[in-house]
Length: 310
Image 1 (cartoon, one colour):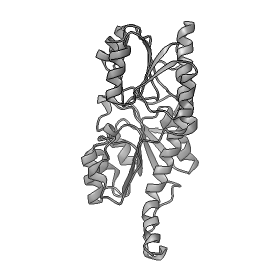
Image 2 (cartoon, one colour; image 1 turned 45 degrees about the vertical axis):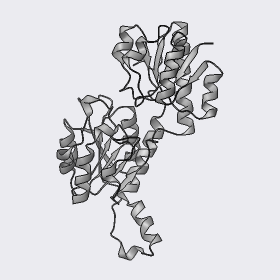
Image 3 (spheres, helix red, strand yellow; image 1 turned 135 degrees about the vertical axis):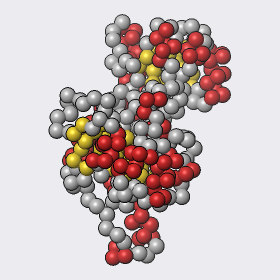
Image 4 (cartoon, one colour; image 1 turned 60 degrees about the vertical axis):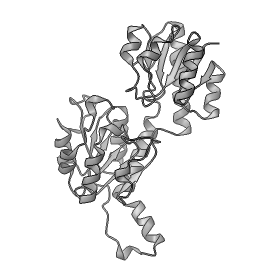
């Protein structure tokens, strides 16, 4: 059987799909990863990782039989794609497999933040009834700015439009398939127009702190920020300062610069909602990522183009 080095934790029922097809070397932590490469370097032909876990150039060089490097989800920022290509090793990702799940989670975060669901829950538990609470806005008519109108961003936009929101976006250039959506040439311009911001752009050096102090100031005191992209896309210190000062109203984050450690600067703030990088996780989405990986392996073995190449 083809030998697969598995670097991500996957539930047993989804992992069974891999065991049925490959000889799996399970190495979801640094120690087992190093040991697996040292012990099985001459056997490993496939590597399945994710964007956060990555795979380095020296690790690629250590595997003489490597024939495919794969990211489980859409992100691949810590995979050394250049080193793989220099070795002639194709790289694929899980583009499209969890877009619906991420978009669902994004709207849940935005709804919870704008409608202050955690604060309302705390008030009820404290015996405070609605007459003593402020009013929070409805979605209809609010302007949502989406930073990164890729596959996930488009699904977020569609869901927001179904709630009656007006959607604009920032990409490096306008999209021909985004008719009816306003394009803005910078994150600051988008934030100036928007009531709320969703960050859905890829990670990496080019988008590091794309939401910074200037963008948050432009968003204004009624604004909410949702980040389901990469923690590096939002300047955590600037976000904490904006939330403490009332410069913006709230934030809901699924990803952090410090992950898997929680964002210490945000933990004491009651206008922040935090989830543990699970926006793309559902039974359906995880199964789809595994099936997509197998489909890429099948295509490679048939000499056909990969379904989701990087």
